[in-house]
Length: 259
Ligand SMILES: Nc1ncnc2c1ncn2[C@@H]1O[C@H](COP(=O)(O)OP(=O)(O)OP(=O)(O)O)[C@@H](O)[C@H]1O
Image (cartoon, rainbow, N blue to C red):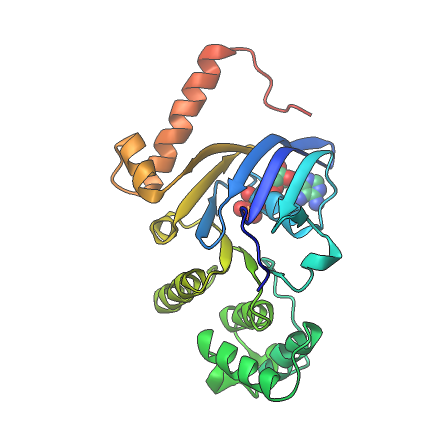
């Protein structure tokens, strides 16, 4: 694990254009190390785009993204940042075990260390009983857990997960959140995007995005206290309503297309 005394991620003045739209119009954000940080927001709010900036696969119009003290996407970060996209990114014609071993070898694991890391990771994502099955024969939820295992096997310092619990049943979702917590306790940093507001309570910190901007950067308790809402879902809606009312009051003729 990389030694890094600063934040896991520092974003300053970030602007991103996708298609013809400025989908991130200027974003500042600091994500502390050693925590599970939830990236929440409605569909199209920019969660995946921000994640793509953090892992270094997004062209940036302006601003900086610093990851573990290095510019996002730097070669030095290759083994230190694990990224799980929304769509599974493993080999359909390999078994579960061979996939995880392949990604373990890619980050330099060999011999017994590789075998131990594969066994441990398969157990963590609850795929031991499917280890010798081809990925093409798995269910969607099982396949997405193979992607997670592939990102996890090298124990990256920062793990970035784009909607990792989509399509999983409640028991698996709970077990995965327990795993995320366990990794944070070991000093790993996790950024987890989610639509599912009841998962917000499992995070140390929440970053709520809307239209490519940070609507709130708070702990779950602060979110509830600030809005007086009973749960994260209601709190988020309350924040959006307040922001919409504020924007409407300050600029009645504002054009939201902002490109
Ligand atoms: N390949 C693309 N080309 C042009 N615009 C894009 C592209 N991908 C995303 N966008 C736009 O960028 C904005 C942010 O999209 P993004 O995928 O980051 O949102 P999101 O919050 O991750 O959404 P979801 O929760 O639905 O995955 C949206 O307005 C979307 O239409």
